[in-house]
Length: 280
Image (cartoon, rainbow, N blue to C red; front, side):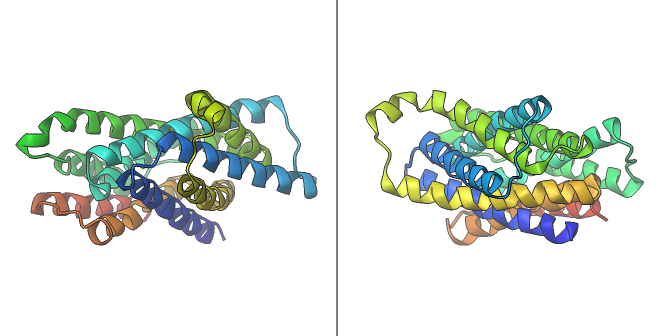
């Protein structure tokens, strides 16, 4: 069951990231999409928790969930800003390297050892990340550093989310409580970013529609994420979920008509090989 939950999370996250990229091509507000997405997800979890009597809030869930929500919201925002500077296929592949952070943290802080083949996968992913980096043409070279910086911020934020979710599973925090405070914390964080637009009510219908879809998929995805971490080995669950970049890669090549150089395609292929090795 944990494997099915991990694959479900992979699909949900992949579709959401594709929608984020689509939003950037339509010049939609990143902050508005994130805000409404968190609002929808928060209300869904709240309704479920109330009707199923599944909410049992406590200070540890508040702390862990709130911090997770802020980091995840920031990671998503940085990713969408990176999508504006570089191709979705390469951006998603680089950010998927956050599994390295999580697997290493798991080995350091939890009783899970890393086999040699997993170390090999980690090394391959790091090398691939160096090779695959996007090199814009001379006319857009000034965008390279902002793009790489956004990718790095997103990678660290999303990787930290994975570590906190593992800690929450290890501490036996109720996953409904965790989701409730996660979406609540992220919602408060995003409310600060869009406070001016909230007062003017300038959201577009398209942004609300996209955010609603993302909110539903995110709720399902994170619910499956926490279940997989609670019942399966984190050193395998995290790399599987990182494969959500495959969905974005395919959409980038076919939906957004992105053109990549040969060495970048090779780097992406070896990065996927590294991900596969870390889950064997």
